[in-house]
Image (tube, rainbow, N blue to C red):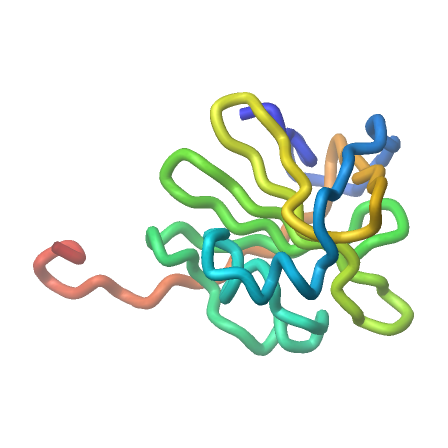
Length: 137
């Protein structure tokens, strides 16, 4: 998957990737019912991320970490991922970027957004609830 915003555990070392175009505002993207990130990827504040659920709708644990000048919330799905970037000073959501089949797309945010790429962030994984004795089926 091309949205490789981190690689491996440890302390974060970041660099900026090329700016990607955000075709719509954050408010419009998060209000739309056509993106998978409406509920999970569009939590409005960093405190809401920390207080929220710890798994994607597909049952993968989410992850949080600091990279560059952002707090980052990454949600993994079966074949896609959503990465939300937050301002650490205000806690406000800045941009939502998704990746699928080698393509990155900004779902909403500033007209041009340069997401940092972290080579070794210190990742905190969420804890998914037990699926029960039937394995979640």
